[in-house]
Image 1 (cartoon, rainbow, N blue to C red):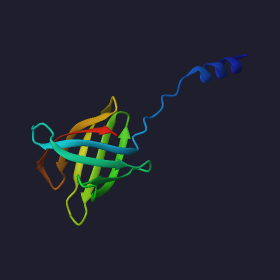
Image 2 (image 1 turned 120 degrees about the vertical axis):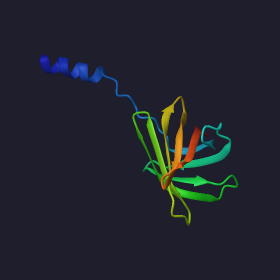
Image 3 (image 1 turned 60 degrees about the horizontal axis):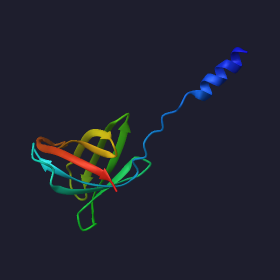
Length: 117
């Protein structure tokens, strides 16, 4: 009887589904405390890879992304460059907002916001 009760409780417990962030995201970024106004587009893949694109659709950078609970992180390196950008923020209500910075020069950074297409 205890086994049946345990099974019943286990089946009633809802598993919270992880959000599916894969796909295309568009938004903007800004320097320092400026309101984000410069175009940004990402494609997030299920395997944790990502790409960033110029406004004309050409490839700008490749990198990785991850989500832990609601904490989001993207790290990418522009094609042909040696520096890397780090975006850290919060995923909520189908948007990601937070801060970005140049990992080689933390004085360069600002705010960003992204929305799933």
